[in-house]
Length: 139
Image (tube, rainbow, N blue to C red; front, side, top):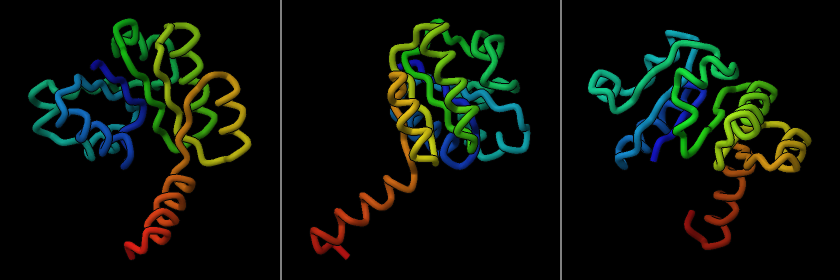
């Protein structure tokens, strides 16, 4: 699978590593050179993970990342608005079928999902996982 991840912070880097371990082709778009240091150097050097040093919400950055051949686009920056903008562009302009945006604001999550963008909220994931563990008496 060809996956483009916008954002090389802790979530974007971890996701890149895990998906690369599964054999997927990963392209990370990150304008901050320091953030890229979280990516596994060996994977970047071998070409298993490609890094584009641009603003991932822009059309030219997406084109350079190979958006026309992407199976999945994941907007994983720390900014809800930037993630939403990029996800919409990937979905509407470039017709990427699977588009995901990380969000922290519940109202934003509702809006993005109404637009057809799949959303992930870290707080909801953690609280759900802990609730499941407690209900199964795993802690």
